[in-house]
Length: 120
Image (tube, rainbow, N blue to C red; front, side, top):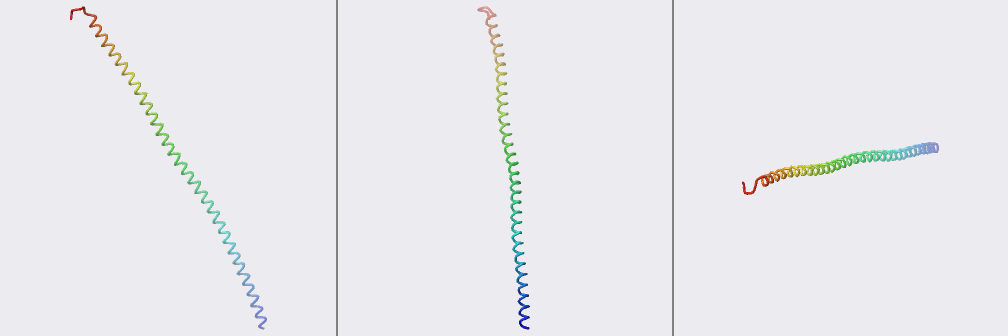
């Protein structure tokens, strides 16, 4: 009877050990699968985050560059317009001054040459 009981205990112990081994193997497989899934998810998330960050950075850089270019263009245009306006104003002023000077010269000439010597 002891031999039969010992044999049964041994059989049950073997079955239990096999079940524990299967469960252990399954747990190890599950952990490996979980790690693989986690790594894959992390890589996907990292790529998504990188793309999003790159797009944001690109948009920010583009806006900044556009603003700088606009300011530079505006300053350049303003300087050109100012120089052009100054030259035009100077030419108009010079022509006006020349006309006025010519008028005065003609008036002086007419007064000087229009009278005989000795008469006021």
